Image 1 (cartoon, rainbow, N blue to C red):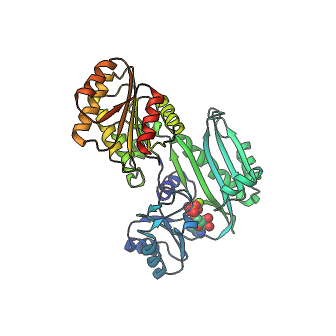
Image 2: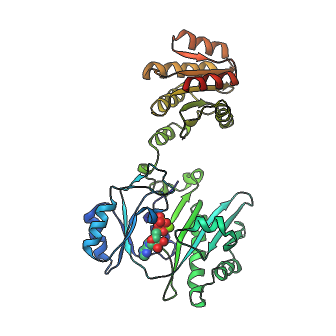
Image 3: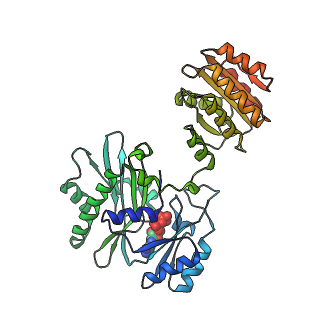
Amino acid sequence: MKIHEYQAKTLFRQYNVPVPEGKAAFSVEEAGQVASGLGGFPVVVKAQIHAGGRGKGGGVKLAHSMEEVKSLADEILGMTLVTHQTGPEGRLVQKLLIEAGQKIEKELYLSLLVDRATATVVIMASRDGGMDIEEVAEKTPERIIKVHVNPLMGLSGYQIRQVGFGLKLPSAAMKKFSGLLSNLYKFFVANDCSLVEINPLILTADDDVLALDAKVDFDSNALFRHKDLLELRDLDEENPLEVEASKYNLNYINLDGNVGNIVNGAGLAMATMDIIKNAGATPANFMDVGGGASSEQVENAFRIILADEKVKAVLINIFGGILRCDIFAQGVVDAAKKTGINIPVVVRMEGTNVDTGKKILADAGLNLTSAVDLSDAAQKIAEAVK
Ligand code: ADP
Ligand code: MG
């Protein structure tokens, strides 16, 4: 689960990770109030969306007067911000962070993430921080320092120094940096983060270090033990169909093709996407109704997929094990009766109670095409969207 920069900075403050003074604003008027509380200019007006690259997209701007704060807030609030992370459709800006402008001496990069391959927390840092870090990673990867921290051992002093020396920090800034990194590590572990990225981490003219940007991603599987963090979720930043699907415990991910898939089991869903791609069609989604879905869940899955305007045909691929074919078929029939089917639907079903399942579908008098096996299903669905 991602959160906004302003929320991440509030959490950083609680862990004594230094950040600039600032506050969220939801209107032009509020932006002015926050700015006047900062006691001076320049003030930075920052769009709050769950994507990076805002600076380059025109979502981070410097104001030198109250009039400028207001006109920039007015310009950025309500704009559709397009960055390399939002895709061409962009993201509507509904929130701002108004913060004190800093005198930047040097922009650095610092991040912590879970490295599954080594089962460690990896700290990455670079002297080449700022808005072009992707290019640094691609062209000069040797300029990125990596330190692996065994979570059972915790972060040691020598590892902090390794990062600090790697960043070539002036000695006067070392102590501040050391506190920052050690507190950031505590924050990371205590909240089950999967990623914390500070780009840029800045060094000021008076050897201060602080987090100028803050990107935080929590491990969703651990959120059950962080009820307070759940309140930070912003549904405006998520795909509405994915939000709807999560209410019914459906594993659903929206993709950009035009074939809707309803499958039981993640492995089968992956295989189904491959096989239809191979037949020349592209998946509009990944929908795993789960091994033990009820007919009600199947009905919701079907309704959610049909609500997606990109979907031009639906492929149902079910292997009846724990989820029996008759239960599944009943879910499809109930959903179809409620929503109506006005696009081609191909069904491939195999497994427990398959004959009863097929009979339920046939007797319902719905406009479904049945397939004998997976390759037949893939052919038929590719044909349907041609
Ligand atoms: P993004 O990574 O989405 O582009 P950042 O928060 O990193 O957004 O801001 C982009 C750039 O704007 C930073 O690299 C920095 O140069 C500048 N900037 C951001 N916040 C401040 C601030 N409080 N004071 C001065 N400059 C800032
Ligand atoms: Mg940034």
